[in-house]
Image (cartoon, rainbow, N blue to C red; front, side, top):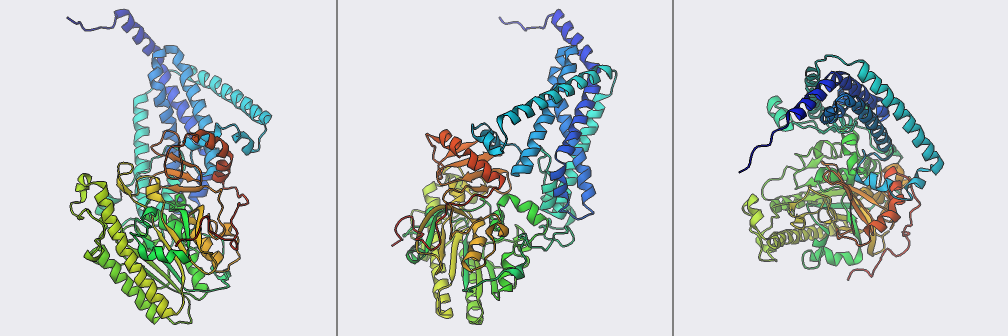
Length: 638
Protein backbone atom coordinates (compact mmCIF):
# COMPACT_ATOMS: atom_id res chain seq x y z
CA UNK A 1 0.00 0.00 0.00
CA UNK A 2 1.47 3.36 -1.01
CA UNK A 3 1.55 6.36 1.24
CA UNK A 4 1.61 10.05 0.28
CA UNK A 5 4.98 11.71 0.50
CA UNK A 6 5.05 14.85 2.61
CA UNK A 7 7.83 17.40 2.82
CA UNK A 8 9.57 17.21 6.16
CA UNK A 9 8.92 20.06 8.59
CA UNK A 10 12.59 20.99 8.36
CA UNK A 11 12.43 21.23 4.55
CA UNK A 12 9.26 23.33 4.66
CA UNK A 13 10.82 25.60 7.23
CA UNK A 14 13.94 25.96 5.08
CA UNK A 15 11.92 26.87 1.98
CA UNK A 16 9.87 29.44 3.91
CA UNK A 17 13.02 30.92 5.38
CA UNK A 18 14.63 31.27 1.96
CA UNK A 19 11.41 32.77 0.57
CA UNK A 20 11.34 35.29 3.40
CA UNK A 21 14.96 36.15 2.61
CA UNK A 22 14.30 36.58 -1.13
CA UNK A 23 10.95 38.35 -0.92
CA UNK A 24 12.34 41.82 -0.05
CA UNK A 25 14.69 41.50 -3.04
CA UNK A 26 11.91 41.12 -5.63
CA UNK A 27 11.05 44.82 -5.90
CA UNK A 28 14.57 46.07 -6.62
CA UNK A 29 15.15 43.01 -8.85
CA UNK A 30 12.14 43.96 -10.99
CA UNK A 31 13.31 47.57 -11.19
CA UNK A 32 16.85 46.50 -12.17
CA UNK A 33 15.56 44.21 -14.91
CA UNK A 34 13.19 46.84 -16.29
CA UNK A 35 15.97 49.45 -16.39
CA UNK A 36 18.08 47.01 -18.38
CA UNK A 37 15.17 46.39 -20.75
CA UNK A 38 15.17 50.09 -21.56
CA UNK A 39 18.79 49.75 -22.71
CA UNK A 40 17.40 48.00 -25.80
CA UNK A 41 16.16 51.41 -26.99
CA UNK A 42 19.77 52.53 -27.26
CA UNK A 43 20.93 49.30 -28.90
CA UNK A 44 18.16 49.20 -31.52
CA UNK A 45 17.78 52.96 -31.83
CA UNK A 46 19.22 53.22 -35.34
CA UNK A 47 17.05 50.44 -36.77
CA UNK A 48 14.00 51.73 -34.93
CA UNK A 49 14.38 55.32 -36.12
CA UNK A 50 14.95 54.12 -39.68
CA UNK A 51 11.71 52.11 -39.56
CA UNK A 52 9.69 54.91 -37.94
CA UNK A 53 10.91 57.53 -40.42
CA UNK A 54 9.02 55.67 -43.16
CA UNK A 55 5.74 56.53 -41.42
CA UNK A 56 3.64 59.66 -41.51
CA UNK A 57 4.69 62.21 -38.84
CA UNK A 58 1.42 61.69 -36.96
CA UNK A 59 2.20 57.99 -36.47
CA UNK A 60 5.80 58.32 -35.29
CA UNK A 61 5.11 59.35 -31.66
CA UNK A 62 2.73 56.39 -31.23
CA UNK A 63 5.28 53.89 -32.51
CA UNK A 64 8.11 55.41 -30.46
CA UNK A 65 5.96 55.32 -27.32
CA UNK A 66 5.08 51.74 -28.13
CA UNK A 67 8.77 50.87 -28.42
CA UNK A 68 9.29 52.10 -24.84
CA UNK A 69 6.60 49.67 -23.70
CA UNK A 70 8.27 46.92 -25.75
CA UNK A 71 11.55 47.64 -23.96
CA UNK A 72 9.74 47.38 -20.61
CA UNK A 73 8.41 44.01 -21.77
CA UNK A 74 11.95 42.76 -22.41
CA UNK A 75 12.92 43.77 -18.87
CA UNK A 76 9.79 42.15 -17.43
CA UNK A 77 10.56 38.96 -19.33
CA UNK A 78 14.05 38.84 -17.80
CA UNK A 79 12.56 39.28 -14.32
CA UNK A 80 10.05 36.47 -14.86
CA UNK A 81 12.91 34.15 -15.87
CA UNK A 82 14.59 34.82 -12.50
CA UNK A 83 11.58 33.86 -10.37
CA UNK A 84 12.20 30.08 -10.21
CA UNK A 85 15.48 30.90 -8.43
CA UNK A 86 13.93 32.73 -5.45
CA UNK A 87 14.51 29.44 -3.64
CA UNK A 88 18.14 30.53 -3.35
CA UNK A 89 17.19 32.92 -0.57
CA UNK A 90 19.73 35.71 -0.03
CA UNK A 91 21.76 34.46 -2.96
CA UNK A 92 18.86 35.42 -5.24
CA UNK A 93 20.33 38.93 -5.15
CA UNK A 94 22.96 37.69 -7.62
CA UNK A 95 20.47 36.22 -10.11
CA UNK A 96 18.73 39.30 -11.61
CA UNK A 97 22.00 41.22 -12.17
CA UNK A 98 23.60 38.22 -13.90
CA UNK A 99 20.61 37.48 -16.14
CA UNK A 100 20.10 41.18 -16.93
CA UNK A 101 23.75 41.55 -17.92
CA UNK A 102 23.55 38.45 -20.13
CA UNK A 103 20.27 39.68 -21.67
CA UNK A 104 21.79 43.07 -22.52
CA UNK A 105 24.80 41.34 -24.09
CA UNK A 106 22.49 39.18 -26.21
CA UNK A 107 20.42 42.20 -27.20
CA UNK A 108 23.60 43.99 -28.24
CA UNK A 109 24.65 41.12 -30.46
CA UNK A 110 21.12 40.88 -31.88
CA UNK A 111 21.13 44.60 -32.67
CA UNK A 112 24.39 44.19 -34.58
CA UNK A 113 22.99 41.21 -36.47
CA UNK A 114 19.81 43.10 -37.34
CA UNK A 115 21.64 46.17 -38.62
CA UNK A 116 24.09 44.05 -40.62
CA UNK A 117 21.97 41.18 -41.94
CA UNK A 118 18.38 42.36 -41.66
CA UNK A 119 17.43 39.45 -39.36
CA UNK A 120 17.22 38.99 -35.64
CA UNK A 121 19.42 36.17 -34.32
CA UNK A 122 18.21 32.81 -35.63
CA UNK A 123 19.51 29.32 -36.21
CA UNK A 124 21.32 30.26 -39.42
CA UNK A 125 23.13 33.20 -37.83
CA UNK A 126 24.33 31.01 -34.95
CA UNK A 127 25.34 28.19 -37.28
CA UNK A 128 27.36 30.55 -39.50
CA UNK A 129 28.97 32.23 -36.51
CA UNK A 130 30.25 28.88 -35.23
CA UNK A 131 32.05 28.07 -38.46
CA UNK A 132 35.87 28.33 -38.34
CA UNK A 133 36.11 30.86 -41.19
CA UNK A 134 33.26 33.09 -40.03
CA UNK A 135 35.60 35.29 -37.99
CA UNK A 136 37.73 36.10 -41.03
CA UNK A 137 34.63 37.36 -42.86
CA UNK A 138 34.02 40.00 -40.20
CA UNK A 139 37.36 41.62 -40.97
CA UNK A 140 38.43 41.33 -37.34
CA UNK A 141 41.64 39.66 -36.21
CA UNK A 142 41.72 37.13 -33.39
CA UNK A 143 43.46 39.62 -31.11
CA UNK A 144 40.75 42.21 -31.74
CA UNK A 145 38.05 39.69 -30.93
CA UNK A 146 39.78 38.61 -27.72
CA UNK A 147 40.26 42.24 -26.73
CA UNK A 148 36.59 43.00 -27.40
CA UNK A 149 35.56 39.89 -25.45
CA UNK A 150 37.75 40.92 -22.51
CA UNK A 151 36.22 44.39 -22.52
CA UNK A 152 32.74 42.91 -22.61
CA UNK A 153 33.50 40.61 -19.67
CA UNK A 154 34.83 43.55 -17.64
CA UNK A 155 31.74 45.64 -18.41
CA UNK A 156 29.41 42.76 -17.59
CA UNK A 157 31.30 42.12 -14.37
CA UNK A 158 30.94 45.76 -13.33
CA UNK A 159 27.27 45.64 -14.25
CA UNK A 160 26.70 42.53 -12.13
CA UNK A 161 28.59 44.09 -9.18
CA UNK A 162 26.50 47.25 -9.39
CA UNK A 163 23.33 45.19 -9.72
CA UNK A 164 23.99 43.10 -6.63
CA UNK A 165 24.62 46.25 -4.58
CA UNK A 166 21.46 47.85 -6.00
CA UNK A 167 19.25 44.85 -5.22
CA UNK A 168 20.60 44.35 -1.69
CA UNK A 169 20.55 48.02 -0.68
CA UNK A 170 17.04 48.77 -1.97
CA UNK A 171 15.37 45.72 -0.52
CA UNK A 172 12.18 46.28 1.39
CA UNK A 173 8.42 45.86 1.05
CA UNK A 174 7.28 46.49 -2.54
CA UNK A 175 4.03 45.79 -4.33
CA UNK A 176 5.72 43.62 -6.91
CA UNK A 177 2.62 41.78 -8.09
CA UNK A 178 0.79 45.03 -8.76
CA UNK A 179 3.77 46.39 -10.69
CA UNK A 180 3.97 43.21 -12.77
CA UNK A 181 0.25 43.37 -13.57
CA UNK A 182 0.52 47.03 -14.60
CA UNK A 183 3.45 46.20 -16.90
CA UNK A 184 1.54 43.27 -18.40
CA UNK A 185 -1.46 45.53 -19.04
CA UNK A 186 0.80 48.11 -20.72
CA UNK A 187 2.37 45.44 -22.93
CA UNK A 188 -1.02 43.99 -23.89
CA UNK A 189 -2.31 47.49 -24.67
CA UNK A 190 0.72 48.21 -26.85
CA UNK A 191 0.17 45.05 -28.88
CA UNK A 192 -3.52 45.88 -29.35
CA UNK A 193 -2.66 49.44 -30.41
CA UNK A 194 -0.09 48.05 -32.87
CA UNK A 195 -2.72 45.69 -34.27
CA UNK A 196 -5.08 48.60 -34.85
CA UNK A 197 -2.37 50.75 -36.45
CA UNK A 198 -1.40 47.85 -38.75
CA UNK A 199 -5.07 47.53 -39.71
CA UNK A 200 -5.46 51.27 -40.30
CA UNK A 201 -2.12 52.10 -41.91
CA UNK A 202 -0.58 48.95 -43.35
CA UNK A 203 2.61 46.92 -43.29
CA UNK A 204 5.09 49.70 -42.56
CA UNK A 205 3.61 49.92 -39.07
CA UNK A 206 4.13 46.19 -38.56
CA UNK A 207 7.72 46.53 -39.73
CA UNK A 208 8.37 49.31 -37.20
CA UNK A 209 6.42 47.60 -34.39
CA UNK A 210 8.54 44.45 -34.62
CA UNK A 211 11.98 46.08 -34.73
CA UNK A 212 12.78 45.14 -31.16
CA UNK A 213 13.16 41.36 -30.63
CA UNK A 214 10.47 39.05 -29.28
CA UNK A 215 7.60 41.29 -30.40
CA UNK A 216 5.13 38.85 -31.88
CA UNK A 217 2.94 40.67 -34.45
CA UNK A 218 -0.74 40.75 -33.51
CA UNK A 219 -3.36 41.04 -36.24
CA UNK A 220 -7.06 41.66 -35.60
CA UNK A 221 -8.10 42.52 -39.15
CA UNK A 222 -11.18 40.30 -39.23
CA UNK A 223 -12.52 41.70 -35.95
CA UNK A 224 -11.68 45.29 -36.87
CA UNK A 225 -13.36 44.95 -40.27
CA UNK A 226 -16.54 43.91 -38.46
CA UNK A 227 -16.26 46.73 -35.90
CA UNK A 228 -15.32 49.53 -38.31
CA UNK A 229 -16.94 48.43 -41.55
CA UNK A 230 -13.72 49.32 -43.37
CA UNK A 231 -11.19 47.02 -45.08
CA UNK A 232 -7.62 46.81 -43.74
CA UNK A 233 -5.13 49.23 -45.23
CA UNK A 234 -3.23 47.83 -48.20
CA UNK A 235 -0.30 50.17 -47.59
CA UNK A 236 -0.29 52.47 -50.60
CA UNK A 237 -2.27 55.29 -49.07
CA UNK A 238 -0.96 58.71 -49.98
CA UNK A 239 -0.29 60.71 -46.85
CA UNK A 240 0.41 57.67 -44.68
CA UNK A 241 4.10 57.87 -45.48
CA UNK A 242 6.33 60.55 -46.96
CA UNK A 243 7.54 57.87 -49.39
CA UNK A 244 4.08 57.02 -50.76
CA UNK A 245 3.94 56.92 -54.55
CA UNK A 246 7.72 56.98 -55.00
CA UNK A 247 9.37 54.06 -56.91
CA UNK A 248 11.25 51.71 -54.59
CA UNK A 249 14.30 51.82 -56.86
CA UNK A 250 16.54 54.86 -56.70
CA UNK A 251 16.23 55.52 -60.45
CA UNK A 252 13.96 58.13 -61.97
CA UNK A 253 11.65 56.25 -64.39
CA UNK A 254 12.22 58.95 -67.03
CA UNK A 255 15.95 58.18 -66.91
CA UNK A 256 15.36 54.60 -68.09
CA UNK A 257 16.26 54.22 -71.77
CA UNK A 258 15.37 51.06 -73.67
CA UNK A 259 17.40 50.64 -76.87
CA UNK A 260 14.87 48.10 -78.17
CA UNK A 261 11.14 47.90 -77.63
CA UNK A 262 9.71 44.49 -78.49
CA UNK A 263 6.22 43.50 -77.43
CA UNK A 264 6.33 41.81 -74.01
CA UNK A 265 3.97 39.13 -72.69
CA UNK A 266 4.30 38.09 -69.04
CA UNK A 267 2.28 34.98 -68.18
CA UNK A 268 1.89 34.01 -64.54
CA UNK A 269 0.16 30.77 -63.55
CA UNK A 270 -1.24 30.03 -60.10
CA UNK A 271 0.39 27.28 -58.02
CA UNK A 272 2.41 25.87 -60.92
CA UNK A 273 5.34 23.83 -59.68
CA UNK A 274 8.32 23.09 -61.87
CA UNK A 275 7.77 19.37 -62.34
CA UNK A 276 4.41 20.09 -63.99
CA UNK A 277 6.35 21.34 -66.98
CA UNK A 278 6.48 18.05 -68.92
CA UNK A 279 5.59 17.05 -72.48
CA UNK A 280 2.42 15.20 -71.47
CA UNK A 281 1.09 17.86 -69.05
CA UNK A 282 1.98 21.03 -70.97
CA UNK A 283 2.69 19.84 -74.53
CA UNK A 284 2.33 23.19 -76.34
CA UNK A 285 4.74 25.08 -74.14
CA UNK A 286 7.08 22.10 -74.09
CA UNK A 287 7.33 22.26 -77.89
CA UNK A 288 7.80 26.01 -77.81
CA UNK A 289 10.59 25.61 -75.25
CA UNK A 290 12.81 24.13 -77.95
CA UNK A 291 13.32 27.64 -79.29
CA UNK A 292 13.36 29.35 -75.91
CA UNK A 293 15.45 29.46 -72.75
CA UNK A 294 14.44 27.34 -69.78
CA UNK A 295 15.82 28.17 -66.34
CA UNK A 296 15.94 24.83 -64.58
CA UNK A 297 16.50 26.06 -61.01
CA UNK A 298 14.12 28.99 -60.88
CA UNK A 299 12.36 29.76 -57.59
CA UNK A 300 9.61 32.03 -56.46
CA UNK A 301 10.65 34.52 -53.78
CA UNK A 302 7.88 33.27 -51.50
CA UNK A 303 5.34 30.48 -51.27
CA UNK A 304 2.45 32.98 -50.95
CA UNK A 305 1.07 34.99 -53.86
CA UNK A 306 1.14 38.55 -52.52
CA UNK A 307 4.79 38.29 -51.44
CA UNK A 308 5.70 36.49 -54.66
CA UNK A 309 4.20 39.18 -56.90
CA UNK A 310 5.86 41.87 -54.83
CA UNK A 311 9.26 40.36 -55.62
CA UNK A 312 8.37 39.69 -59.25
CA UNK A 313 7.57 43.33 -60.04
CA UNK A 314 9.62 45.22 -57.44
CA UNK A 315 12.75 43.10 -57.94
CA UNK A 316 13.19 42.97 -54.15
CA UNK A 317 13.38 40.08 -51.70
CA UNK A 318 10.00 39.14 -50.30
CA UNK A 319 10.86 39.86 -46.66
CA UNK A 320 11.14 43.55 -47.61
CA UNK A 321 7.49 43.69 -48.58
CA UNK A 322 5.96 45.05 -45.37
CA UNK A 323 8.47 47.89 -45.09
CA UNK A 324 8.46 48.82 -48.79
CA UNK A 325 4.81 48.39 -49.71
CA UNK A 326 3.68 49.57 -46.29
CA UNK A 327 5.55 52.83 -46.86
CA UNK A 328 3.72 53.32 -50.15
CA UNK A 329 6.64 52.65 -52.49
CA UNK A 330 5.80 51.56 -56.03
CA UNK A 331 7.54 49.41 -58.67
CA UNK A 332 9.92 51.08 -61.12
CA UNK A 333 8.96 48.74 -63.97
CA UNK A 334 5.57 50.15 -64.93
CA UNK A 335 6.45 53.87 -65.07
CA UNK A 336 9.67 52.94 -66.90
CA UNK A 337 7.61 51.10 -69.53
CA UNK A 338 5.34 54.12 -69.84
CA UNK A 339 8.35 56.45 -70.23
CA UNK A 340 9.53 54.25 -73.11
CA UNK A 341 6.24 54.38 -74.98
CA UNK A 342 4.69 51.03 -73.99
CA UNK A 343 0.95 50.48 -74.00
CA UNK A 344 0.23 48.34 -70.94
CA UNK A 345 -2.65 45.98 -70.13
CA UNK A 346 -3.06 43.82 -67.01
CA UNK A 347 -5.48 40.93 -66.46
CA UNK A 348 -5.89 38.55 -63.52
CA UNK A 349 -8.35 35.67 -63.49
CA UNK A 350 -6.79 34.69 -60.17
CA UNK A 351 -8.36 36.94 -57.57
CA UNK A 352 -5.82 39.44 -56.29
CA UNK A 353 -8.31 41.79 -54.64
CA UNK A 354 -8.35 40.11 -51.23
CA UNK A 355 -4.55 40.30 -50.98
CA UNK A 356 -4.54 44.03 -51.62
CA UNK A 357 -2.45 43.65 -54.78
CA UNK A 358 -4.76 45.98 -56.67
CA UNK A 359 -3.78 48.73 -54.24
CA UNK A 360 -0.11 47.82 -53.89
CA UNK A 361 1.77 46.18 -56.75
CA UNK A 362 -0.71 47.25 -59.45
CA UNK A 363 -1.90 50.56 -58.03
CA UNK A 364 -0.17 52.79 -60.55
CA UNK A 365 -0.31 50.64 -63.69
CA UNK A 366 -1.52 52.44 -66.79
CA UNK A 367 -4.99 51.24 -67.70
CA UNK A 368 -5.49 49.52 -64.37
CA UNK A 369 -5.84 45.84 -63.57
CA UNK A 370 -8.86 43.89 -64.86
CA UNK A 371 -9.71 41.27 -62.27
CA UNK A 372 -13.52 41.23 -61.98
CA UNK A 373 -14.01 37.82 -63.58
CA UNK A 374 -16.77 35.50 -62.37
CA UNK A 375 -17.43 31.77 -62.40
CA UNK A 376 -15.23 28.71 -62.21
CA UNK A 377 -11.53 29.32 -62.67
CA UNK A 378 -11.27 27.86 -66.17
CA UNK A 379 -14.19 30.08 -67.23
CA UNK A 380 -12.47 33.12 -65.74
CA UNK A 381 -9.27 32.17 -67.59
CA UNK A 382 -11.15 31.99 -70.89
CA UNK A 383 -12.74 35.41 -70.32
CA UNK A 384 -9.36 36.86 -69.42
CA UNK A 385 -7.74 35.55 -72.61
CA UNK A 386 -10.63 36.97 -74.63
CA UNK A 387 -10.15 40.42 -73.07
CA UNK A 388 -6.40 40.28 -73.58
CA UNK A 389 -6.80 39.40 -77.26
CA UNK A 390 -9.24 42.27 -77.65
CA UNK A 391 -6.44 44.59 -76.55
CA UNK A 392 -4.05 42.90 -78.97
CA UNK A 393 -6.52 43.35 -81.82
CA UNK A 394 -7.00 47.06 -81.17
CA UNK A 395 -3.56 48.22 -79.98
CA UNK A 396 -1.63 50.31 -82.56
CA UNK A 397 0.99 48.14 -84.23
CA UNK A 398 3.57 50.89 -84.09
CA UNK A 399 3.26 51.07 -80.29
CA UNK A 400 5.03 48.38 -78.22
CA UNK A 401 2.66 46.36 -76.06
CA UNK A 402 3.21 45.05 -72.52
CA UNK A 403 0.67 42.37 -71.61
CA UNK A 404 0.32 40.66 -68.21
CA UNK A 405 -1.98 37.69 -67.60
CA UNK A 406 -2.47 35.77 -64.34
CA UNK A 407 -4.13 32.36 -64.89
CA UNK A 408 -6.25 30.84 -62.12
CA UNK A 409 -7.03 27.33 -63.34
CA UNK A 410 -4.19 25.59 -61.50
CA UNK A 411 -5.19 27.03 -58.10
CA UNK A 412 -6.99 24.69 -55.68
CA UNK A 413 -9.43 23.10 -56.56
CA UNK A 414 -7.58 22.74 -59.92
CA UNK A 415 -10.50 23.39 -62.25
CA UNK A 416 -10.79 22.37 -65.93
CA UNK A 417 -13.42 21.57 -68.57
CA UNK A 418 -14.09 18.03 -69.86
CA UNK A 419 -11.77 18.47 -72.85
CA UNK A 420 -8.75 18.48 -70.51
CA UNK A 421 -9.61 15.36 -68.51
CA UNK A 422 -6.41 13.71 -69.71
CA UNK A 423 -5.11 12.10 -66.51
CA UNK A 424 -7.10 9.67 -64.37
CA UNK A 425 -8.08 8.62 -61.82
CA UNK A 426 -8.41 12.21 -60.68
CA UNK A 427 -10.14 13.85 -57.76
CA UNK A 428 -13.54 15.25 -58.78
CA UNK A 429 -12.94 18.61 -57.07
CA UNK A 430 -15.71 18.11 -54.55
CA UNK A 431 -15.50 18.04 -50.79
CA UNK A 432 -12.98 20.78 -50.00
CA UNK A 433 -11.76 19.73 -46.56
CA UNK A 434 -12.48 16.12 -47.46
CA UNK A 435 -9.30 16.15 -49.57
CA UNK A 436 -7.57 14.71 -46.50
CA UNK A 437 -9.07 11.36 -47.57
CA UNK A 438 -8.25 11.77 -51.27
CA UNK A 439 -5.07 10.00 -52.44
CA UNK A 440 -2.30 12.43 -53.30
CA UNK A 441 -1.97 10.87 -56.75
CA UNK A 442 -5.62 11.72 -57.51
CA UNK A 443 -5.14 15.32 -56.37
CA UNK A 444 -2.05 15.66 -58.51
CA UNK A 445 -3.82 14.14 -61.53
CA UNK A 446 -6.52 16.79 -61.24
CA UNK A 447 -3.86 19.50 -60.99
CA UNK A 448 -2.15 18.05 -64.11
CA UNK A 449 -5.44 18.30 -65.98
CA UNK A 450 -5.80 21.92 -64.89
CA UNK A 451 -2.25 22.64 -66.11
CA UNK A 452 -3.07 20.92 -69.40
CA UNK A 453 -6.02 23.29 -69.82
CA UNK A 454 -3.95 26.37 -68.99
CA UNK A 455 -1.34 25.22 -71.52
CA UNK A 456 -4.04 25.02 -74.19
CA UNK A 457 -5.24 28.55 -73.43
CA UNK A 458 -1.70 29.97 -73.35
CA UNK A 459 -1.00 28.50 -76.78
CA UNK A 460 -4.19 30.01 -78.17
CA UNK A 461 -3.20 33.38 -76.74
CA UNK A 462 0.36 33.33 -78.07
CA UNK A 463 -0.56 32.00 -81.49
CA UNK A 464 -3.17 34.71 -82.00
CA UNK A 465 -0.86 37.38 -80.58
CA UNK A 466 1.87 36.48 -83.05
CA UNK A 467 -0.57 36.34 -85.94
CA UNK A 468 -2.02 39.78 -85.17
CA UNK A 469 1.20 41.57 -84.26
CA UNK A 470 3.24 39.85 -86.98
CA UNK A 471 6.20 38.95 -84.75
CA UNK A 472 7.02 36.89 -81.68
CA UNK A 473 7.06 38.95 -78.49
CA UNK A 474 9.48 38.71 -75.62
CA UNK A 475 7.69 36.06 -73.57
CA UNK A 476 8.14 35.31 -69.87
CA UNK A 477 6.24 32.32 -68.49
CA UNK A 478 6.35 31.22 -64.84
CA UNK A 479 4.29 30.33 -61.76
CA UNK A 480 3.61 32.58 -58.81
CA UNK A 481 4.68 29.73 -56.49
CA UNK A 482 4.43 25.96 -56.31
CA UNK A 483 2.11 23.51 -54.59
CA UNK A 484 2.50 20.53 -52.25
CA UNK A 485 0.66 17.27 -52.66
CA UNK A 486 1.54 15.72 -49.27
CA UNK A 487 5.25 15.45 -50.04
CA UNK A 488 5.66 16.94 -46.56
CA UNK A 489 2.23 16.09 -45.17
CA UNK A 490 0.33 19.08 -46.59
CA UNK A 491 -1.73 20.06 -49.61
CA UNK A 492 -1.40 23.61 -50.90
CA UNK A 493 1.13 26.39 -50.44
CA UNK A 494 2.07 29.33 -48.17
CA UNK A 495 3.09 26.93 -45.41
CA UNK A 496 6.79 26.19 -45.97
CA UNK A 497 9.88 26.87 -48.06
CA UNK A 498 10.07 23.43 -49.64
CA UNK A 499 11.01 22.87 -53.27
CA UNK A 500 7.41 21.81 -53.97
CA UNK A 501 6.19 25.25 -52.91
CA UNK A 502 9.02 27.37 -54.33
CA UNK A 503 10.51 25.67 -57.42
CA UNK A 504 8.56 26.92 -60.43
CA UNK A 505 9.08 26.76 -64.21
CA UNK A 506 10.65 29.76 -65.92
CA UNK A 507 10.65 30.03 -69.70
CA UNK A 508 11.80 33.05 -71.66
CA UNK A 509 11.72 33.67 -75.39
CA UNK A 510 13.78 36.53 -76.75
CA UNK A 511 16.25 37.04 -79.58
CA UNK A 512 18.96 38.04 -77.10
CA UNK A 513 18.70 34.75 -75.17
CA UNK A 514 20.29 31.68 -76.76
CA UNK A 515 17.94 28.66 -76.73
CA UNK A 516 18.74 25.99 -74.17
CA UNK A 517 18.70 25.23 -70.47
CA UNK A 518 20.32 27.24 -67.68
CA UNK A 519 21.05 25.38 -64.45
CA UNK A 520 22.15 28.32 -62.31
CA UNK A 521 19.79 29.31 -59.48
CA UNK A 522 17.47 32.13 -60.55
CA UNK A 523 14.47 33.75 -58.87
CA UNK A 524 11.54 36.08 -59.23
CA UNK A 525 13.68 38.92 -57.87
CA UNK A 526 15.68 38.68 -61.13
CA UNK A 527 12.79 39.43 -63.50
CA UNK A 528 13.01 43.24 -63.40
CA UNK A 529 16.77 43.38 -63.93
CA UNK A 530 16.46 40.74 -66.67
CA UNK A 531 13.84 42.72 -68.59
CA UNK A 532 15.87 45.94 -68.28
CA UNK A 533 18.99 44.10 -69.47
CA UNK A 534 17.27 42.52 -72.47
CA UNK A 535 15.69 45.85 -73.42
CA UNK A 536 19.07 47.55 -73.45
CA UNK A 537 18.94 49.71 -70.32
CA UNK A 538 22.44 50.31 -68.93
CA UNK A 539 21.70 50.99 -65.26
CA UNK A 540 23.57 48.89 -62.72
CA UNK A 541 21.28 45.98 -61.69
CA UNK A 542 22.09 46.82 -58.05
CA UNK A 543 20.24 50.12 -58.55
CA UNK A 544 17.14 48.27 -59.74
CA UNK A 545 16.73 45.95 -56.79
CA UNK A 546 18.07 42.74 -55.27
CA UNK A 547 18.16 40.61 -58.40
CA UNK A 548 20.66 39.96 -61.16
CA UNK A 549 19.92 39.54 -64.89
CA UNK A 550 19.09 35.94 -65.73
CA UNK A 551 20.83 36.68 -69.02
CA UNK A 552 24.04 36.74 -66.94
CA UNK A 553 23.39 34.16 -64.21
CA UNK A 554 25.69 33.47 -61.29
CA UNK A 555 26.07 29.70 -60.66
CA UNK A 556 27.48 30.35 -57.17
CA UNK A 557 24.72 32.63 -55.84
CA UNK A 558 22.37 31.98 -52.93
CA UNK A 559 18.75 32.98 -53.34
CA UNK A 560 16.86 34.08 -50.21
CA UNK A 561 13.23 32.91 -50.13
CA UNK A 562 10.48 32.93 -47.52
CA UNK A 563 6.94 31.88 -46.74
CA UNK A 564 6.02 35.54 -46.62
CA UNK A 565 3.59 36.03 -43.77
CA UNK A 566 5.72 33.89 -41.40
CA UNK A 567 9.47 34.43 -40.82
CA UNK A 568 10.63 31.11 -42.20
CA UNK A 569 13.33 31.28 -44.86
CA UNK A 570 15.49 29.23 -47.17
CA UNK A 571 18.82 30.13 -48.73
CA UNK A 572 18.95 28.20 -51.99
CA UNK A 573 22.21 27.49 -53.76
CA UNK A 574 23.00 25.12 -56.58
CA UNK A 575 24.57 22.53 -54.26
CA UNK A 576 23.19 23.45 -50.83
CA UNK A 577 19.87 24.61 -49.40
CA UNK A 578 19.62 25.99 -45.86
CA UNK A 579 16.21 26.28 -44.19
CA UNK A 580 15.90 28.38 -41.03
CA UNK A 581 13.60 30.66 -39.07
CA UNK A 582 10.26 30.25 -37.30
CA UNK A 583 9.48 26.71 -36.21
CA UNK A 584 13.02 25.47 -36.80
CA UNK A 585 15.35 25.21 -33.76
CA UNK A 586 18.46 25.48 -35.94
CA UNK A 587 19.09 24.94 -39.61
CA UNK A 588 18.11 22.17 -42.02
CA UNK A 589 20.71 21.34 -44.65
CA UNK A 590 19.57 19.61 -47.84
CA UNK A 591 20.17 19.65 -51.55
CA UNK A 592 18.07 21.92 -53.73
CA UNK A 593 15.30 19.30 -53.89
CA UNK A 594 15.06 18.95 -50.07
CA UNK A 595 16.93 15.66 -50.00
CA UNK A 596 19.30 15.03 -47.05
CA UNK A 597 23.01 15.50 -47.71
CA UNK A 598 25.50 13.07 -46.12
CA UNK A 599 28.14 15.81 -46.31
CA UNK A 600 25.75 18.65 -45.47
CA UNK A 601 27.76 19.98 -42.53
CA UNK A 602 30.98 19.94 -44.54
CA UNK A 603 29.31 21.82 -47.41
CA UNK A 604 27.84 24.32 -44.97
CA UNK A 605 31.22 24.93 -43.34
CA UNK A 606 32.79 25.54 -46.73
CA UNK A 607 29.99 27.85 -47.85
CA UNK A 608 29.55 29.75 -44.55
CA UNK A 609 31.70 32.74 -45.62
CA UNK A 610 29.78 33.08 -48.89
CA UNK A 611 26.47 32.75 -47.03
CA UNK A 612 27.52 35.44 -44.55
CA UNK A 613 28.50 37.78 -47.39
CA UNK A 614 25.17 37.04 -49.07
CA UNK A 615 23.20 37.92 -45.95
CA UNK A 616 25.17 41.13 -45.50
CA UNK A 617 24.36 42.10 -49.06
CA UNK A 618 28.00 42.21 -50.14
CA UNK A 619 28.35 42.17 -53.91
CA UNK A 620 30.65 39.53 -55.37
CA UNK A 621 31.82 39.45 -58.96
CA UNK A 622 29.53 36.75 -60.37
CA UNK A 623 31.02 33.72 -62.00
CA UNK A 624 28.48 34.38 -64.73
CA UNK A 625 27.54 32.80 -67.98
CA UNK A 626 28.00 35.57 -70.58
CA UNK A 627 24.90 36.51 -72.53
CA UNK A 628 26.74 35.97 -75.80
CA UNK A 629 27.84 32.48 -74.85
CA UNK A 630 25.53 29.47 -75.19
CA UNK A 631 23.15 29.53 -72.27
CA UNK A 632 22.57 25.82 -72.37
CA UNK A 633 23.98 23.72 -69.57
CA UNK A 634 22.72 20.75 -71.53
CA UNK A 635 21.44 20.37 -75.07
CA UNK A 636 18.47 22.49 -76.06
CA UNK A 637 15.05 20.97 -75.57
CA UNK A 638 13.71 18.93 -78.46
